[in-house]
Image (cartoon, rainbow, N blue to C red; front, side, top):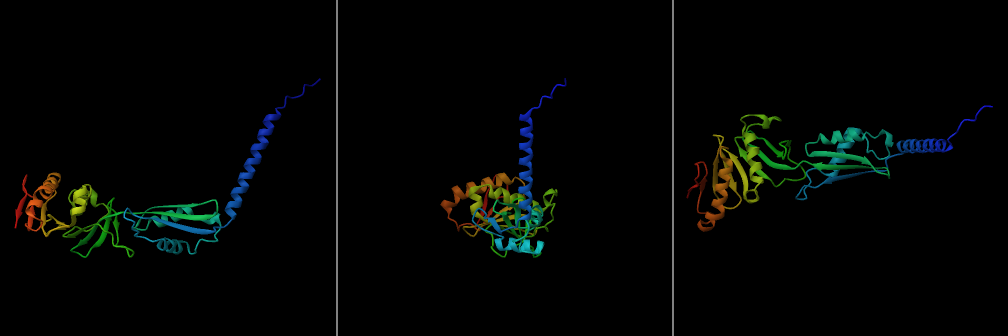
Amino acid sequence: MLKKPNIRYDRITWVVFLLVVLLALFSAINRKKNSFADGVEVEVIPLAGGDKLISERDVRQALLLAFGNTLEGTELGRLEVERMERVLEQDPFVLAADAYIDQNNILHMRITQREPMLRILDINGGNYYLDRNGAKMPPSKNLAAHVLVATGNIAPYTPEFQEKKKHTLKDLFNLTQALLADDFLSSFIQQIHVNSAGEFILVPLVGDQRIELGRMRNLEDKLRRLKIFYQEGIPYAGWRKYETINLKYNGQVVCRK
């Protein structure tokens, strides 16, 4: 007499259950792909001061130019979300773009802006910003960013300027970083000028002085002497007493009336 096989009905039940779940999941995915975008929401994250160099309207216009329609009413399966992010990240004001579709079939575009650090106005007519990574940004039609301004004999921008051994734009970028890293100097210096000899001159927000910094050698010590002079010397002498403050000599602050 043949022995009946030992059938594990509990295993069969689990297999059937998993198949039903998978079928339901695939069905839901297909329904989602075949449904349509009910709207597009654009969010541009403001900079620290609340500024927006690119508007929500600019973002929508960029998507319209790249994809040829308003995206509302498009099948979700045809929305190229990753390509949208790449297109928007080509904009000089955009650091990162994050696109996603929520459970209500709304397409969301979240934009992180580049943060301008320095505005360049050079003798060759150059007019642009550098962001905190050294990337070039054009002036914004929406807003003039309140940042340090650099003028004068500045070498033209090239994407690899930070890799150069000698480059006035590299020195200028490093000087700006040093000024912004100090709470007192970042609020006190409003302009950096590069003269024909490639030396740096700082222009303060208060007073009429020219601060002759010279070359980048011993920059940390020069800025330390400058802070001590303004915090301890100027309050007694007065903001308008000196015309020139020279930091080029080691260990000295030489003033001229």
